[in-house]
Length: 409
Image (cartoon, rainbow, N blue to C red):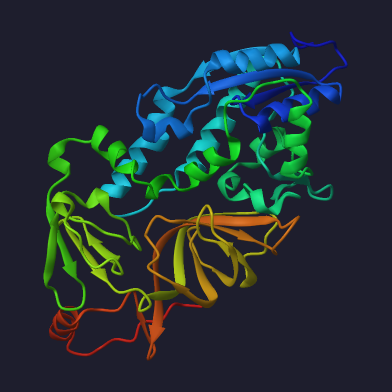
C-alpha cells in the first residue's frame, strides 16, 4: 500500500507550476476520486529575467494552491540537472552557430523528475497540465502521443522525445478540454492566479530568439569565447559593420544591428554564420530555401515500418505549422526528409523536427529527429545553400570536375 492512499485508491503525482492549467489538472484528477499529490519543481536559482520563463511561480504559491485543493504538496530543486541538460547545450550550440531546442530538454527533465519522485511517494502515475494526449494501442501495447482537442495549444512537439516507459505512466487531464473550458473551471475554484500559462509558453517557444537570450550566453561563458567580428554581405563579401559576438545572431534573423548599435539595412537577414572567423553573413530574403533535410538521432514509433518511405507531416519548430513531406529511412537512426514544397529560409543544424501521421485533432506523433544538414537540388547537384561568387570561384578551383551529388532515396 502506498503511503498516501488506501489500498484501492490510486495515487497521481502532478507537476504544478502555480498556473491555471496544472491546477485544473490536479483538480480534475481529484474529482475522479484519485489521491492527488502536487509537486513544485524549481528548475534553477539564477536571478536572470531571461531564465524566469523556465521556473514555476514560488513554491510557497504552489503550496497555497495545493492547500486550497486539499492535496499534499512537495517541492524539489533540480538546478544542476537544468544546467547540464538545458543551459550548457543551449549556450554551446549558439556559440557554434547551431541550434538546440530547450523545450524538448525541459519537458524531458520535468517528466524524469516526476517519475523519480513518484517512486519515493508511492504514486502510481504522474500528470501535468500539458495539452497533449497519450494513447495505448491495445493490440501491441505501444503508447503514442496524440494532438489534443485544443489544436491551437498543441504541445506534442515539446513532448515528442518521451520514452515508452514515460508515456506509460503519464496522464494529461486536459487532453480533451478546450482552454476556454479550463479557464472556466479555474474560475470556480476560488484561487487567485498570478502566473500566465499562455504567455509563459509563448516565451518558452521563442526563448532562443528574444533579446534576453544574449544575457544567458554572456552569463555562462568566458569573455574570451565571445569575440568581435564582422557582418558581411554574402553576395560580394564586403564588410557592412562590426559586431560584438556571434551569439547575438541566429539564422534567418532580421532587424540587425552591429557594434555600438550600428544599423544596417533592415530588410537583410542572417543567412550564414562562421563561428571560427566570427563572421556573420547577411543577404536579402526570398533567395533562400531548402527542399530536403538530413536528420540524425531519429526516434520513431516502435510499430513503424522502416523498410519503405512514408508520407507524413513535419513540424520544424516549436511554434511552427505541420507541413507535408516524405520520410526516407537510412541506417544508424538517420533519415532524409523531402518536403512537398520548398521551405523558405535557412534550416539550422541542430534544429528539431517532429513527424505526424496527419494534421488536426488526434494526429499521432510517429517520430522525431535532429537536423544534420539541409539543402536543395539544382541541375542534378545537391547544394546546401546558394554560394557567393567568391565561393563559386574557390569551388571551381578546388574541383577540376564537378561531381553530381545525389541523396540516396
